[in-house]
Length: 314
Ligand code: SD4
Image (cartoon, rainbow, N blue to C red):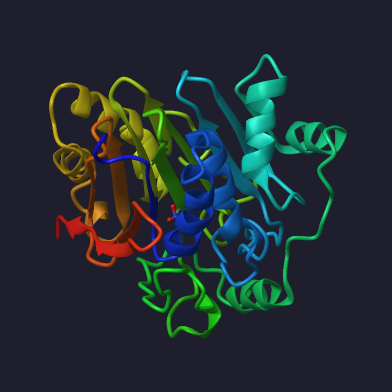
């Protein structure tokens, strides 16, 4: 069938992430395994300061991670404000598969992770600590828009360091990934260190099923990036999937969700970034965002793994 397997994900680190997911998909593997393997790439990369290890801490200096995962049966798992674990997505998957619950937070999530063999590690890199101490001087909470970085090639082998990019200090780039496997089944995952220098205990959209991620195997999946508070208010990813159910294309559905944010927050929406990314059951994909600068990666073969600019409202 045309359009599968396919994996798509947010931002430029979607390129190497898609590549890892593709290794699973091309062997006929399950979309669920693909998205987990895919988002583990930025989670483990200390140069990515917005996801996992090396993520910027909250304003008190703690790296706290949010993540969720959802499969083709509608099973889902999530962790929020999890500390000391490099791969929160895998803890989210364990919550899904090994507990009667969907979401574990904070101390309880850590306790569960440790009981399930995950290792306790320090996630604050010297670079992120330095950025935090720099931030403390003014302590001004001001989410930066977004940073585009085109230094990855199709194989995702080009290394990059966001810290070396001018202005890339308070970015907020989450990885959201959606995949359809050779069997035509959909899954998704989303993982982030959340907004840099957020209040302690702050949870964004990324671990919230329906906000940061939603998958319905009959229709499609959606995920979001950007200022999570705005996404939660409209339950963004669920909205996108329901619009696709009504016949909207992935891009049109994402655009509608973006317009909903503009309508709810006419002033604020001019100053922040939110982006939606969607994939439907036919393997069609699309995205839409508030501001120029959001990009997403699409991989459909060993040789096609490309970065596409999201259309924007403003
Ligand atoms: C959050 N949505 O915690 C996340 C941050 C993010 O792109 O997406 N960045 O609100």
